[in-house]
Length: 104
Image (cartoon, rainbow, N blue to C red; front, side, top):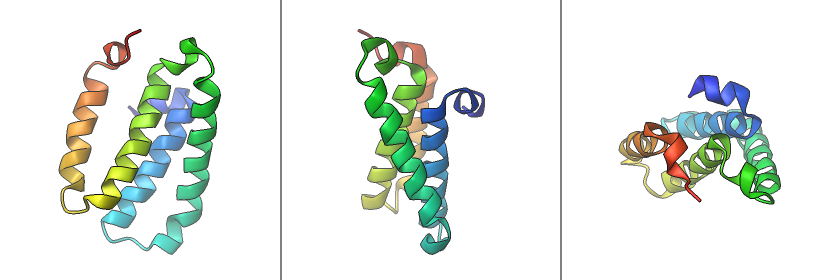
C-alpha cells in the first residue's frame, strides 16, 4: 500500500489522514495532529472531486483507495471499540484485488 500511496497523491493524503485518525483513536492528543488530519482530509477530498469528473480517473486504484480511507476515518468515529477489526476487514476488501474492485 505504501508503494501505491507514494505514487498517488490522493491516496497519500488519505493514508496520512487515516494514520492521524488512528493515532487519536489509540489515545493520542487530537491537538497535536488536528492540523495534519484536516489538511490531508481536504487534500484527499479535493483530488477525489477532481477525479470524479472523468470515468477514467474515477476508477483508478488510488481514487478508490483514498475514498476507502475517508470511509474508514468516518466509520472509526462511531465504532471506536471495533475500529481495529473494521480497519483490518476493510483493508482486506480494498487491497485484496484492487483492480477488480471498481468495474464499469
